[in-house]
Image 1 (cartoon, one colour):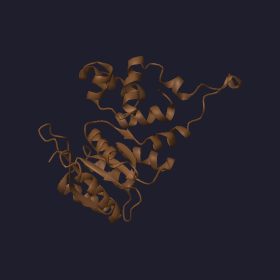
Image 2: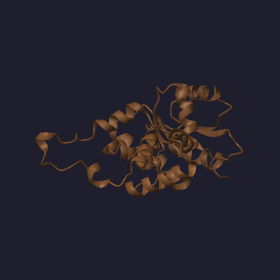
Image 3: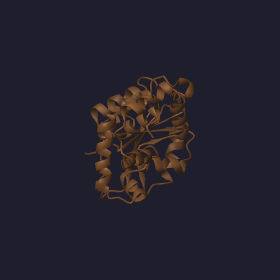
Image 4: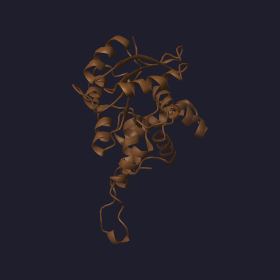
Length: 231
């Protein structure tokens, strides 16, 4: 069964992976409040069990905790993306260290939420991620930004320019606008609406952005944009 969204099936299949029974119960309650949009198809207590259940239930979106026994969420995400590349992983965790954030995205996570994310926002993140957007919790974005070396001031006029000024001069103004909307978690349709352009034009801009930034997808583009202050 293909894990991509079928346009004729608006219900998004979701799986919860968390070693805390209390967290799983809370998430189930949240998902049940949006049963017209999402459907819980499986739950697992660790990454190894998750891989077994994904093979059976083929969820479209996996809500993945990081700190778990047997196989943690980052190792599990690597395996999920290797075995089921169409499955979308949302890191939903209390871990907010720079290392965890970067490793999660390197493993192939599409979005990153903290566990205190309000239920309505979590549903929004699930739906938008399933439809092609990436989403980074604002607190996580601040953590990423806080580790960026400030641009040199007047006293550093002889210092090297920031990497973003050197590597990405070819992004057009419109591509920068599209990139900014990607970092805000907008999907293609939302980007088209905001910029009053066609979906085909959005796709062309995305293709050019990915090529110029040397990334493979929207998540990579968003993370690089935040880390290197491209926008």
